[in-house]
Amino acid sequence: MTGMKLWVDDERPAPEGWCWVETSAAAIDVLATHTVTEMSLDYVLKHGDRTDTVLYWLENHPDRWPQHVHAHSSSSAACRLIEHMVVQLRPVP
Image (cartoon, rainbow, N blue to C red; front, side, top):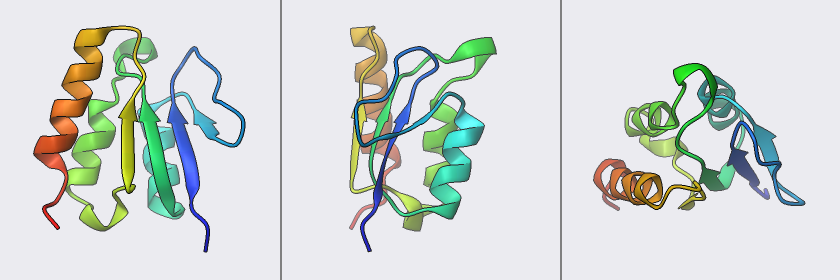
């Protein structure tokens, strides 16, 4: 079974072939119900929503982690934060 690519961003549209969601709740819904093999995250979403919510959810659902997780925020600090969180929260194989 082929997995999907998940793009989480409230402003920038997803690249061709990616499923685009604009909230952490929508991202969690996709992760809970589909096989996601690759995910790319912006950090800050609208109305105080942030993608760290997604990463904390994944910490509690280790079987749902995508093989590849990327950061695409326009803020280099936010990208570093996402990358750090992935390293800290991803289950050890």
